[in-house]
Image (cartoon, rainbow, N blue to C red):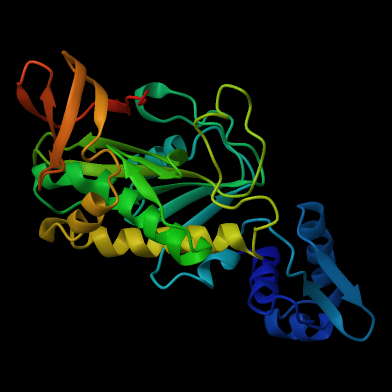
Length: 322
């Protein structure tokens, strides 16, 4: 770990309190001038720091640049965090790390993505400073059939993270959209590589993108997208807290995936149950009524001709009532 990151972690852990240059120099075995240079470099990266003579340096409570140390202090579990100011896609970065042998719970986060994407390669709007965009490397040691539930575990984890940090009840639009007030605040994309010899997964990468801070969405997104926090609601270190809560809750459900620990919450939060929907799933399409969500997270629907189908994937949209 380079000196700049060590100093940032110390300032994160003492956020709002002053640490003297002498204290930091002694702690890391460097000169006070080296500490000063690191502080100036951090300011150049957008961290809000104050310096007072005879008191030292302090990281402002209002500073909202994501950092590994800033997330780790809210994190119960252990992860190898790689935080980037900007990238094309955290999923692409995580996949490259997984292919190179990165261990499970390696996590890539970015303040912005230039090529974020969701299911069916749809773009995911990922501007700087307002969201949490992260991807987790997994190496599942579970039956191949159980790996289908990785995404559903992540959806429940995001809902609970939002509730714990923002105090808002989040719901799930089957399969993997997390919503507030029926508007999407989070998308999840799971990608994987199979091991030909074992027949199981060599690795999986779960990408999670959350609209956290209030912003005005462009016209195509405004009717369907929302942020976790409304105007004036955002708390100090909100993005770091959301990121840590997602990782901790996701780990809980992932480690209990074979027990279906996620299922009761996933079903309880699934707002398409009982709704009239338009279905697009493989070769199936048409108007249907949602009857149930079974233990495999298949959506049970009845089409207009009375045919009942269990959908393992696809999309549904709620039909408006007139």
